[in-house]
Length: 319
Length: 209
Image 1 (cartoon, rainbow over the protein chains, first blue to last red):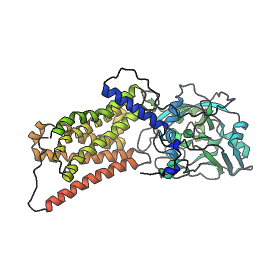
Image 2: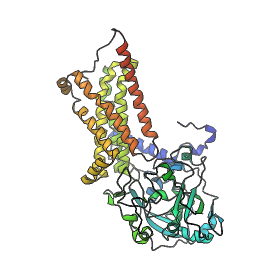
Image 3: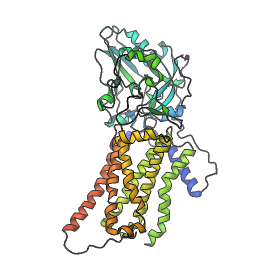
Image 4: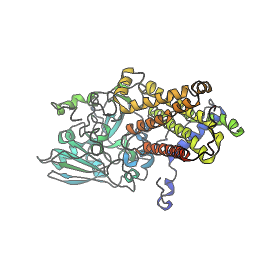
């Protein structure tokens, strides 16, 4: 067990709200059970009264024809159940442990095989790129899915600004490394910092989004603040969070889950119901909030837009 | 003895608390965004915890000499089976929605599912033969031999857990380490008692417990 020195912990960190609420719920449960008063109609808080501090609303967000009209998952679902191993490996860990993370100030360096390498301030990005709401399906490699109203701008728009040169064939992304603010980085669940990659045509695809917001507000820390990648036809882990560096490169870059387990997680990681994870089926998924599993769609339902990029490729080999 | 008799109903109710919490939580949206997974994880954890508790009885007896504690063992073991049944039913009904073809394929193709099923099928005969009648029918010696399957069930449970996690293997390793210690204590005592000369092999008082 990790025993922290008291001096390092601000008093506000000591009992986190989530645990506190859960504890109270547990006590309520115990009270109900032991008193046998199951029908007293106790007022119950929502499971986690969303650690939604006052995040800034994002103005002037356009709707997008690329959005799905499926029922969106709640803000609470999206912000309390996700993977962000930098804050711990449990689904609730990102919400519970990301309070100390500081997503501001922030810059993203874009360089490599480009004519105009640049470092972008997050505030300038928000000002200079027209923001769109993109309601996308998100399919996790663990066979669950959500519908999420992201706000952001196409990665391609940013890449055009730096003018990739003809040598640029892939895009390599790097997450921030701050073990002091990201407790999971003190463990070895993955190699840090988290890295991801796309082929250049995938990166330039209009569906590929740099997200800076969610449900009309800036991204909460646990979902990859202040800027993260969203690639809706690929498994969720391709959507690298809290990006600090984007580099255009000549050859296929390493990716974190592939480094961790190459047999299970490939570079492409396109959603594909016909190619199972070695340990579980990818044929069906649980959409959070639904009782019956649904069939997983090829390319997560974005096949019309993206399948042509993989024409002629053996997707069993290039998983 | 009396302490045991009077405390037993309370321990019984305490053992039901995790299940009661899940039922309550399911009706009050307190199980998070993915309640079915939460139920699967909570019931799975409690199988291993009750296996640990039931396997702790013998070492505790030997280390402390407090023999009446043996009277809790069957109850704890049956609660491991109870949570294993809930865990299996959660998978079949809530998770797979009775999709038998998917379940069949899972058992055949997914080693962690196969291992989980093996663990359950090892616990099943132990639950069935947990009654006084079965102890009498089998005879204490054979009954004891049969019930050593619980060691295999514990190993199957840990391997099942180890094979399903994505990269953070700390939890299954913790359970593995606890079982290893519990097994080592048994091994040590059986080694010591085999070596010891005649004295003081008290007959086990648990035949009818």
